[in-house]
Image (cartoon, rainbow, N blue to C red):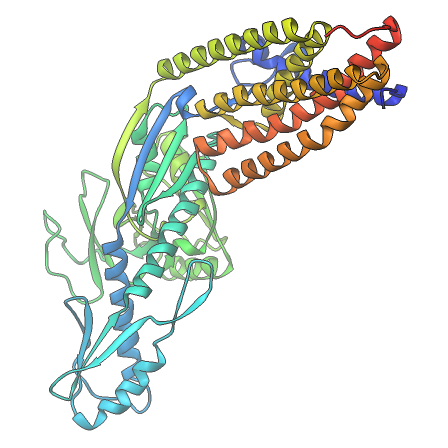
Length: 543
């Protein structure tokens, strides 16, 4: 139908104007839209002021690849398995044996009596569970291998490859989730965090020129524990002194006191933290305030009440960052960490504590900085490519279809503005492949117009009137073009769901571009042609 009711006409024009408003900030310098604090000024306080986010390849930033320390994970799993074996043998009635030991990647236990072998194997089989994948699915494989020794009294318990692979997948996935929470709290827009290979994590942070800050933020395990200090034990100048059972020596961040001996058993752990935030102490220096949950607050209150006058150590990743003296019982479940922080380091520590501890150490194996100059060069080249492509399309369409070529040009311009407005409003990230997606969108929009105009030309040559030819041309081209765009949109959706980084950037621009192309080709251009027919009332069709 070439008739548009007033409300339909108003709605179409409103959509185009809204797209123009959202795309307009991309053409206005930042200092005219935002103040030094990043807040909109003047008329921009009431209008959309957000621009398209630029990805790492356009804006510059840090590119890092971390490797998960799976050997540490394996060692910890073996230690837990050693404790499980010991607990299984100590069940009532206990089975006498030598202490279980980790030997060559297995837990080895030697029973005191050969007659207890079958009973011990039965108990150990109870701790052998099906392998659980990262999604919670259980397989038919077991987590443990339990083998008898040749002497009839030795049992070797190992971890199966299927279990190790499941642990690896869960560890990497948990690491990605913790990294994402940590980086999101810094206010970084659209970082790329994805798995790379079996045990590596790719981290790309647009706009961050200091990769070391990301390494410090991401690479810190952030396992925090609270221990009482053993003042009667001298750790020695190098921290290698012999200690009584239940006492451990940790290094400190205080150069005047490089080592401290503390009780091995933690009073409270970081898992009991509810929140942490950057604050200031009584001297006005940056610090980190924290608050425990109910169980943590109770344990912390009892510990401080029973140890007034003594020192307690706050240990972060096996390093004492603060060891204050308890002046009175702290019953509120909250406290403050002082450690010579700057505002940024205090913020980073609070963010890490809020995000949670990493399940394993991460080691940076690749790091590089993408300079903003390279990104700006890519933007300029992309703009040139879009301008050249746009100009050639306009020339071709005007020469081939006359007035209808002008209509397609206006619709194409509206398409680009709607696409920019959509990217700005959704705060999607534009990458270099995304620019390719914009150029592809322009080609798809022109293709739709060519199909429509060729169908109109065909209908007119068959003897239809101008109005009927135009109406039939739009109606009959609609089904074919819609089918093609729907299948392309499905492909873009799959790319977005399964891809990462630049692939998702391409998928976003392609998906939004498909929607805007269909709208401008079948709705906006049709409105312009209908307005032309009403005002000019042509008797012939020249195209």
